[in-house]
Amino acid sequence: MILKILPIITLLVSYSLQSISQHFPIHRVVFLDSLSKVGEVCSYTLNTKELYGAKRSINLFNVMPADGQEILLFSVLPSSGHLQENWEKVNLDSIRDKVLSVYDIKAFIDKKSDPEYKWQNSLNWAIVKKEFGEFYISKNCLTELFTISNHKPSAVDPNRTINTQAATTTMREIRQKEPDAFESMDPRGDYKFLQANSNLRGFYFSRKIKIASMDAYQFWTFADWNAVDSWNINRGIDRFVYIPGKGIVGGSYDFWFKFRPAMVEDNDVFVSGERLWNNMLEEKVMLAEKLKK
Image (cartoon, rainbow, N blue to C red; front, side, top):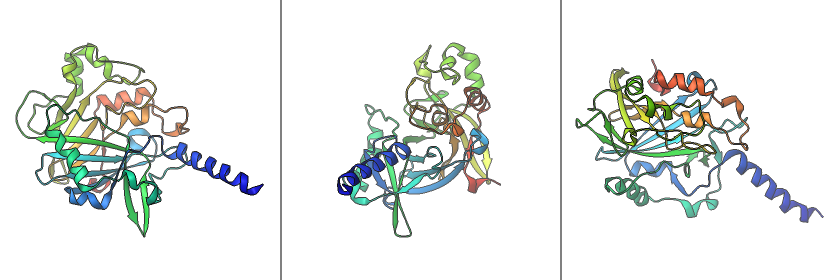
C-alpha cells in the first residue's frame, strides 16, 4: 500500500514546489561562472522596500562584452508569498538539456546587430550559481538585452538603445506633449494599448546624476500595459540607471509588482496603481545597495 501511495505523494510535492516557486517554464539556463567568458560581469542587489513597500531583494547581473556595445541583463526577481528566497537548490541532471554554452550566449547577443531581429524580454531563462558545493537556480529571472550608444539622435532611440548623448526628456514633459498616448502608461487601469503615435515607444534619457563620484544616466521606458492576464514583461526594467563600465545599477520593476495571477498568494507585495503612478511620474528608482552613501 505504501509503495503505491509514495509516487503520488512525490508527484504532488513536486507540483506544489513548481507552482509556488517557478511560474514560468524554463527554456534556457546559464551558469553564472560561465558568464565571465562572455564579458565583464557586474552584479548588484536592490532593496524593494522604499519603492514598493515590501522588503524583498532583486539581484542584477550585467554581462558586458568587450566591445562595450551591449548589456545582457539578468534580473532575479523576488519570489512569492512566504518563500522570500530568490534561489532554490537544483539537481543539475534535471536541467542539463537546457544549459546554454558560452558560444550560445554570444550568439544571442550578436543577433542584436541584425536590423531584422527584434529582441523580446523573457521570463523563461534561469541562472545557476554554485555556493558551498551546492547549485542554486533562480526562481524568477527577467532577461533583457540592451545596445549602448553615444551619438546624438532624436529624443528617443529605437530598438532598446541606451544613448547617453540623447536629449533629456522627462515623463512629465512627454505627458504634457502627448496626453492621449500617455494614457497607455497609466498603471491604474488594466488593459491598454498605445492610443497615438506608436513611434513613441522606446527609452528616454531623463537626467544625468552623480553616484559615488561617477557619472550616471537615468532612463525611462515608454511602454503600454497591454496584458490583462499576465505580467507585462515588455516593460522590463522600466526606469533604470546606467553607469558606463558598471552597467545598470538601479531601476524599477513596476510590471512585477502590479499584477498577481490567482496561483500566486503574495498580496503583501502587490502594489496599488496609485502608488505605481506616483513612482512613475516622480521617476523613482531603486539604487544598488553597495553604491548608496
